Length: 450
Image 1: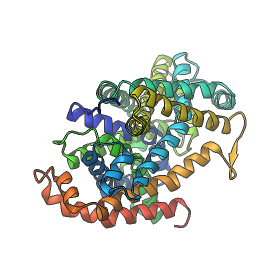
Image 2: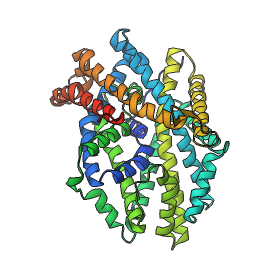
Image 3: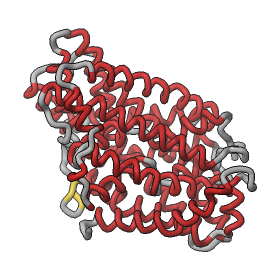
Image 4: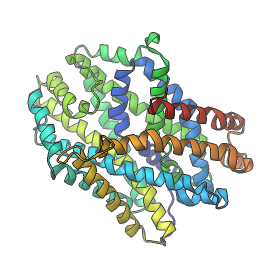
């Protein structure tokens, strides 16, 4: 078995772990969720939920991973002395593999759009763009190949290991992502009429706040930070003993939230400038935004071209930072539990994700594969988002809050009493009561009970 790796720097820890959270959920899902739920009112609730649920939840998974210094399944097994809590780790590994498979389909679409935007084909009339996306997504071969290619790119990073692969890639991808995003935000906010979009995102209308908006914000915060996927637990197993878990969680949450807000400042001002809504769901980045770019920057064709290329490059980089972490969860498991080389373990995960990608792509395109009345891709999405993630996140909080010895939690949270002692009781209250109740509300809301 290969020697266990670890992150080489505090910057690497923050960028890699933040990269696991930052993805299409920030740049695509956050803007249209904000658009559907009242703009700034939703943003306020979202930030509150990041603090209320996100940071304590992240720290809980960090505690399990760093203390055990093992993959997610073995980590829970070590801390529970072989009792059934090991199931929580297995659940996270299975969840991340399923998500990786269908996420690769959308990531493949982004990769295809990047390639055609480089060729100058993305910008055109609205009807042409809509028909082109429909033709591509329904093709039996091309979307599958794009998704598999994205999985292969992810594989190439993960197979190189924690420090030379994941950390090094994160140190390049995250700064490039931020630079691209800032440039696009400046271009978007400079448009005539863009300030209406900025006001929508940043000027709250408190009459828009409701229980539904709060629950939607809770759900977005939960999924945005990758809680419940075993990703945070796995990455924490590579943390050094002097890593301040609370500070790291705060920095990651801040960076994740910043990117979500910047994404809103990219999309809402551009959409407002041309009079197009930004709440159109999956079609937003593949049909609506190309029209926005064309109308907003069409007077300078070269600028419209550059903006479209940069935007789809941004999506590809964001997707890759997430798929790297999803891949690593399973790779660490197979490496340690079956004593395989990292290369062999990585191939198992890549092939499993590739099979899921293959059938999910077909289910929304060429062959309309259905499960319980939904396409296979929608079924996988709903199963993980509505059941597996909330269940995994709740069990992780209950495990740390109620099961493991208090001294273990205290020592990990405070680095053996060196840091954050004054926040420990507040953290313990949050992880015992606040987080489980919030996650239960998310769970019931996703199932349509609330």
